[in-house]
Length: 72
Image: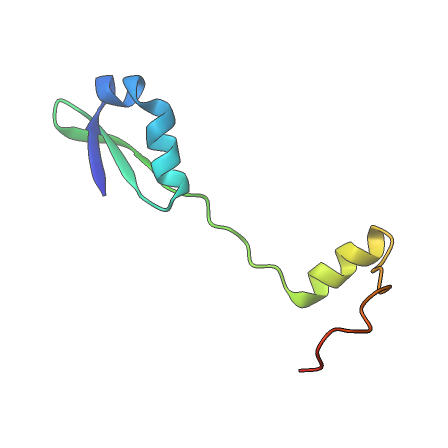
């Protein structure tokens, strides 16, 4: 977890957001005391049913040309 003073956070906002997107947490401080915490937004896991439901709503699957795929 990084601790960053407000002035530095303002100057490096894009870099800090990139760090948060990569999974890091950033604590923004004022006079050495924490005032805010940036954390990544949890990504919802999609179920197989959700994937198929979305595909169906978008017109289904195009299975042409899949004859030569390996059977596993």
